[in-house]
Length: 272
Length: 237
Image (cartoon, rainbow over all chains, first blue to last red):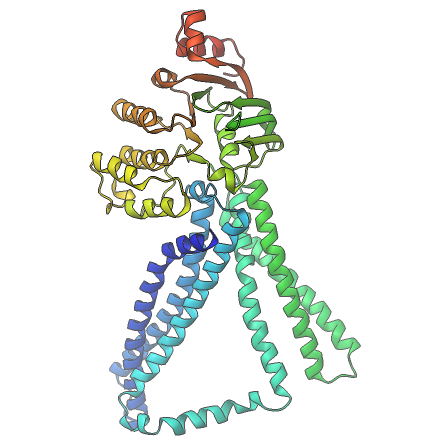
C-alpha cells in the first residue's frame, strides 16, 4: 500500500517536475549563450556596448530563472502536501485504506524526491550552461583534462590531512539538515492548516521562525559552553563538537516535528 | 457474517465547546438502506466522518464489521462526502486508476459502463464537467465498489430534481443487497421512498429510530411529515 501511495503522490507532482526541468534547460541554453558572448568580450577586451550590458542582464535573468525553477519544484511538492491533506482532497486521502503514518511518510518521501529533483535539475542545468558557454571555444574541449586537473588542485586542500573529517562532517550536516528540514516545514504547514482559524500562512511562518530561533539559541548556548569548557582543545575540535551537537539537534527536531504533525493530523484535524 | 455492520457505543465527539455527538448508541444490521435524518448541526456529518475514519472520537467506541476504525475498515467502507474530493485537474481515467489501485472491491468495468451511459469521456478532466456531472462521477466511482458499508453524506444536496432521481436510482440499483447504505440528508421527501430504516438525530442524540414501513403503518404519516412533527416540538431546531 505504501508503494501505491508513493506512486499516487509522484503521479500528481511529476508533470510539474518535468516542466521545471525543461524550463531550466531552456534557461541554461540562454545563460550559456550569454556567458559565451561575455567571455568573448572579456577575452578580446572589446569596449562594453549596450549589447554587452543587455547580454549580461539576460545572463543574470537566466541564473535567477534556474534558482526559481529549483525552488518552485520544492514549493510545488509542499503545496501538493497541503492540498492533498488539508483541503477537500483530504477526504479522499484520509479515507484510503492506509495508516496515517503511511500517508505522512509518503508525503515526506515525495518532498525529498522533489528536493532531489530540484538539485539534479539545478546541477544538470549549470553543467549544461557551462558546456554551452565553452562550446564557442574549440580549444576548451581539447584541453579539458588539464582544466579539470587545475580545478581539483584548487580545491584539493579540502581532501587532505586534518581538514578531511571536518569537511565530511560539514557535508553530512548540510545533507542531514536538508532532509530534517522537510518534516519541520510540513509541521508548520500542518499547524497553520489545523490550528489556525485565520491567517494560516502567518501562523505557519511564525511557528517556523520560532523553531529556527529556538534551534539557533540552543546551538549558540551549547557552542559557547563548549568553547569555554574545551579551551584546551584546538579550534577545529571545538568547532567539530559544536557541529556534531547541531546535527544531533537538527535530527531531534526533525523527528519531533514528524510525530507532532502525526498527533495533529490524527487527533485535531477536522476537514470541513 | 457479523451481526452489526456499524456499531457505536457511548460515542461522543466534542469540537472545543461544542458537543457534536452525545453518548450515542447505535447498531446497524447488514442489508438495509438507512436514512440519517436531522436538521443542520445535528451531528449527521460528524457520525459519518467518525465512521469513515476522518475523525477520532472524544470518547466511546465505534466499530465497522466488528473492528475498530483502521485501514481494514476503510477497505470495507465506501464514502461519498458532501463535496467534490477529487482534484479538478485529474482525468476521469486517473480517478478510476486510483480507486482500482487502492480498493480490491472496485468494479472498474461497472464504473466505465455507468460513465459511458452518462456520456462522460474517461479522458475528460473533472474540472471541465458541470457541478452536477462532477457529483455523478463521484457517485458512480463510490457505488462501483463492492463495499460492506456505504456512507453517503448529503448525496442529493445542491443538484436539480432530475439529478436527484438519477442519484437515488443509482444507489438502489448498484449497492450490494448484503451491504448497508447510510444516507445523511435533510431532504427527506426525496429520499424516503428508498429508505428501509431511519434515524432522527438532534443535537448529537438519537431522537427516534425505526423502519419506514412501521411509521407509515402506525401513524399513517410519511417520514417527512413525522420529521416535521418531531422537530417542531424540539428546542433549537
